Image (cartoon, rainbow, N blue to C red):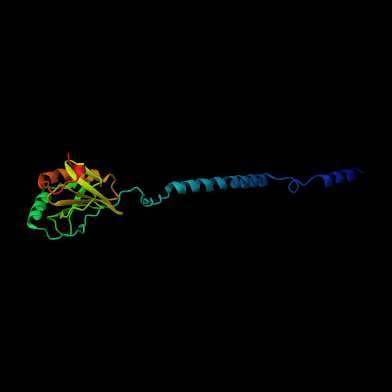
Length: 209
């Protein structure tokens, strides 16, 4: 009976190498877990390193601004040059020779015809034409005296056309709508007109004084 009892105990003892995990299996499991945890961290670090080392993308060209100044034309301005009698031609040459090289911030530009009687400034061009005829206006029309010169303003769709009304020969200044307060643009020309073109003709009542 003793032998039987011993045999039974021997059969019920767990196998030391089969049922209980050994050191090798535990080590492999820990290594696997560590590898799984380390993999995402490695990928994250690698991505950040690549982003830092990657060259910056070239900057995009700036988009033109609606308020950016446009390029000013310096091409000759088309103007007519009618034939003038001797006296008006002489007065106009004197006037054109004394006109300023710029008016406010507008530089003078060449003209296509009659540089001895025409001038132009800026873009769009403010133009000066000497030697034309004075317009016929009603006695009640508004006129303005600017720096001792009498001016009549004809409001047109694209410009204000101002003409002298008190000179031997008329001088016409065309101010495009792009510029505000057109009477201020004739002020720089008025001083030269007074010095170059004598007063004369039928001066409107609004300019007498």
